[in-house]
Image (tube, rainbow, N blue to C red; front, side, top):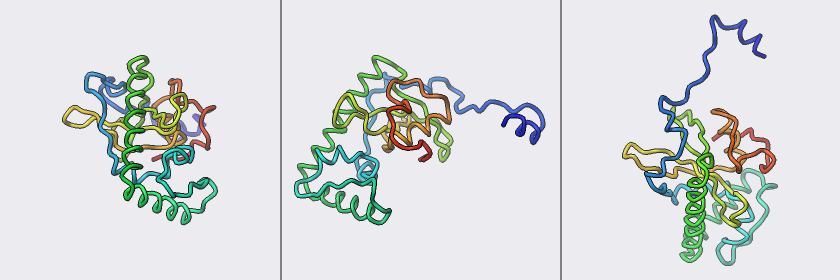
Length: 195
């Protein structure tokens, strides 16, 4: 509790500051749409819900429920899926198109409501990033969050994707999320996993 903490430290504990510039807390639409790092996304297939793979899995791939898999089963399963995708150019293009379409929709949402892009703190780089919802299968249901960071060149880079559970936990480090998509009632899981 606050009383215990105040007894352990001298003076007043200052509120955490995550950025010197308030503009880091909002997506700057004048910089355009972020790039997507598909090679990195293909390394994070386990963060994409099973319902996506039921629609976009390569032909002949047996889609299973991944939630009940052990770690080793999951590594084998998603390794096999990654290999199938890399060897099936049609599936690869369809997956890329699904991500691009979802990102275009997300950018429209950001234009309508700037709170759609939610700030999160990334301690490894000691910087703020933004979380953007991607609706990959159904435009009314978010599937993953795209982690977007501003590059030194003044563009946005879609660095990785994370689950909604991870996004909720990561965003709460900075502030209580006030977006319409990142609410605990919509998210499966415990919110305990940080990237």
